[in-house]
Length: 471
Ligand code: BYC
Image (cartoon, rainbow, N blue to C red; front, top):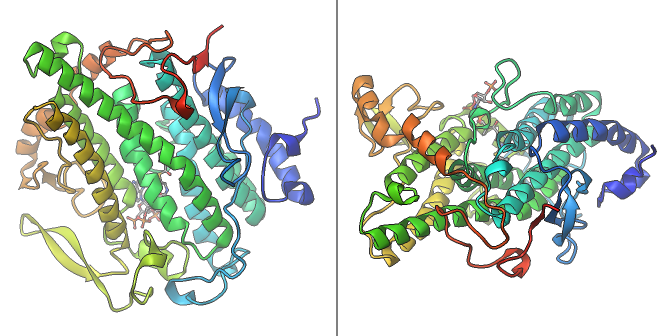
């Protein structure tokens, strides 16, 4: 059957005028759909879901709501509006016009960055594919699917760049993006966190809060890129990414709220007996997801990061707003590193410290979200604070990866750390308990007993709106 691809792929890149690109995407699209059917949300493909679809980048078109079956979702290609005057604003090419084509000398590096970014998108869909079966409400179920289809669109965004600008190598990389699998022994996804399981909804909310937020900071740095198509693509992706973090932040806030209600009603912190998730368990999940996400920033001192910057490929968070020379040749930055058995701040060249700097921006953002959760606890009159652990805790990448660091930042022996582990990271028992809570709730307007209802519906829909139609 002939498919009208131009109709099927909404875009603002004049796809219909570029036959070569159109053909490449026509070949890739059926394989994407096969991947989606195999690895996308399990059990919900034929159902009507109330989804947001982007049909253009302007205020009117980027959020059109309506019922769609997920395989019919129109995964489009959108770049933020072009600024014809745009200049590269950092690194050794500062002041030159932004590149509209890939500079030959940076081709390999740029492709690698795009592939690494692209690889995370299908990975997260794979990680989350079973969660629909145990959603705590139709509202949450719909939000999961919204996140999933948009990660699918973000894969399209990177595949568009590979196809449009990297010729045959790009097409091969686009194929490989559909071949690697999250958690697979032989063909794993590229970055660590994207090979971890997302086995339950508490993990999902933590993932969308912490790991999607790494996405925000990485995309924001790539949105500064001298390679203009990448910058414009990432700028538009960031508008969608905001909803994913909203799902995470409000998801955890609703769990915290329910926990506090149960603590107050039953006058105990041990709310497990009453079907809630105790604050200590929330802290352990937080510790895990935050630290796994910290690893996504790479080593705090990194020549790769320095090169990406000097080449003009990847900037700092809000690079354009920073008031310095945007070359960083002489500047330094305070990086927390281990020294003589302690975590201390050391001045390092600013250029090689760019991963640490981006990670610090991320940490401040995470801390603001955690403070909002703590407000919920405080308002309930409960004396407990959720905390971000020390950046050295539970690390696999970077200066602390070979050390045993406690959540409060003490470097201890491996034995002492192992003794503390069950107080700091989710235990098998925690996982089993959380799993036991995961029973699906499918009645419109109803919520599982471990989570509070949201303050308002999606697109201002009423509380009992049927976000997913089962009939
Ligand atoms: N796991 O100098 P280093 C998102 C590798 S999330 C495995 O320390 P660098 C999303 C590294 O590749 C955002 N390997 O770090 C969220 C390098 O390998 P080579 C995704 C790792 O290169 C939720 C070596 O270690 N986007 O969008 O400065 C849902 C030494 O590297 C890891 C990006 O990440 C790791 N964690 O920085 C859906 C942006 N960390 O070269 C989506 C693109 C490092 O020695 N990527 N390595 O073979 C980048 O900017 C950089 O590749 C990284 C690493 C920040 C990831």
